[in-house]
Length: 104
Image 1 (cartoon, rainbow, N blue to C red):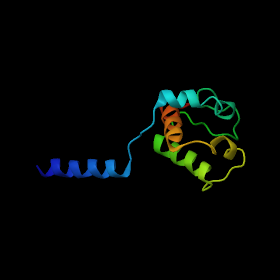
Image 2: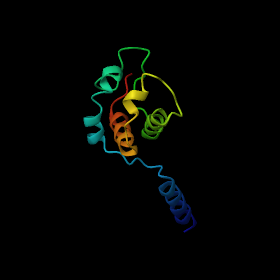
Image 3: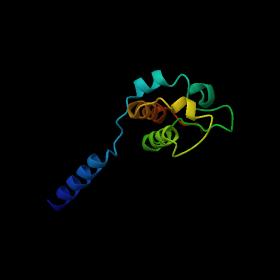
Image 4: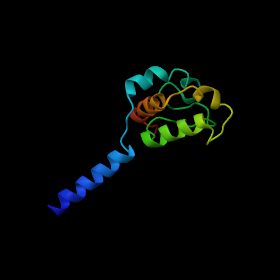
C-alpha cells in the first residue's frame, strides 16, 4: 500500500509540473519545413555548426525553442524563425524531433 501511495504522489507531482510531453508529432512535422533548411529533413544537420535535433528529449527541445523565442537564449539566426511560435508550436516541434531516430 505504501508503494502505491508513493507512486501516486510521483504521478501527481509530474502531472502538476507538466513534465509529460504535450506535443503532437504529426503537427510538429507539418511545422518543421522551415527548420529543415538548417537542421535537415530528418533532424540531422549536414553542417556541423547546426545541431542535430533528431532523437533529442522532448522536454529539452521544447525548453530551448521557447528560450530562443523569449530571448532567454540568443542566437541571431534562430530568433526570426521562432519569434512567432506559440507554446503549442514549440511542443509540437519538440515532439516531432524527439520521435525521429538520432544519428549514430
